Amino acid sequence: MDTKKEKTGKAMNSEVAINLADAQKQSSEYARSLIEASLDPLVTISTEGKITDMNEATVNIMGIEREKLIGSDFFDYFTEPQKAREVYQEVFAKGSVADSPLTLRHKNGKLTDVLFNGSVYKDDKGNVLGVVIVARDVTAQKLLSRYSLSLIEASLDPLVTISTEGKITDMNEATVNITGIERDKLIGSDFFDYFTEPQKAREVYQEVFAKGSVADSPLTLRHKNGKLTDVLFNGSVYKDDRGNVLGVVIVARDVTAQKLLSRYSLSLIEASLDPLVTISTEGKITDMNEATVNITGIEREKLIGSDFFDYFTEPQKAREVYQEVFAKGFVIDSPLKLRHKNGKLTDVLFNGSVYKDDRGNVLGVVIVARDITAQKQLAEREIAGREKELMRIEELERFRKLTVGRELKMIELKKEIEELKSKN
Image (cartoon, rainbow, N blue to C red; front, side, top):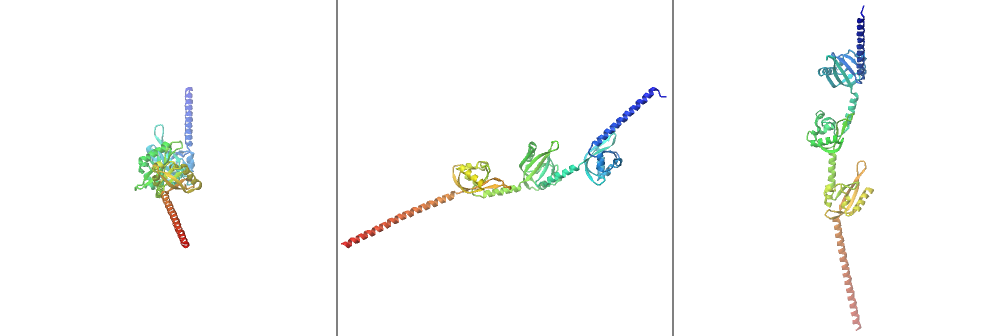
């Protein structure tokens, strides 16, 4: 018979065993809850590559019951089994692997793109027991990436994303075309190397970080064949969902056509021999030709932004004519007088019309001030000549009258003499 002491010992051992079993059960349930807590497929794999456990997300993504998955070859469920095996072996070699792209196949044929993340797991003695794999479903991210890429490619202007270190992370085809460099070589390269003034480009990029955005900074991109393209650099920072700045998005607007148009417009302005001025809706000079500089004696830089009406002898009258242009859309041959800075006055005929943007919004007024000094002098000479001619005619008329009067007087005298002779 067992002694009392032996019975007590057996009871204690039994209680320890029960407590140990309970602890193991709780630990197992805790591990199971951790496995199932993952929304991504999570799988444990033996050193032989066989599935030893998985969560419900794995069952769903493969469409295969848990019982059939247990003990099966993990690599058979990928579109590229050998590639999956190599990544798995890499986990053993390095201890872990992150974001290796693979594709899982559902039993009905549906494919799911995943990022394979894995690490080895060990027993309490440090012996490797197998691998834990989490396969992050990136279908949504991939769709979002494709959508983002379509947005990037939708831009006709060069569009580039740049890291906080100034390295290119992505770009559209327009960027490839304007630089002449393949996408693979652009990725990871220094963004500033493609500008004629790298330091200036870097300063504008830094300004984006400082201000959050920048608009219409003029820069020049260089194609690998040496061709230069003038652009307006527009950029803003982009952030993750926590508000952390990830980098900068740049759109470089090609302004070659606008620059050519601007030069063409300037050539048209300069082609006018008369003073030609563009004026804003506030009455400020926005541009002018050399004839305007000459007639006022004031440099272009000082004329830009100044009040147009200050250069006339009658500023209020000039303002009224300017306002008439807005009211009627145009004005023709309004006489005014411009003053040169040295005091010289020039008579002009003020001709103007409004100019608009492509939506019909009035941007300002274009003025041509026809210098009529020569015409006025000619008119004055003609008037003086006519007055002289009239004076000559009047003098001739007086002479004629005087001459006729004398002749009549002589006739009368002769008649009187004849009468006197006849009486005698």
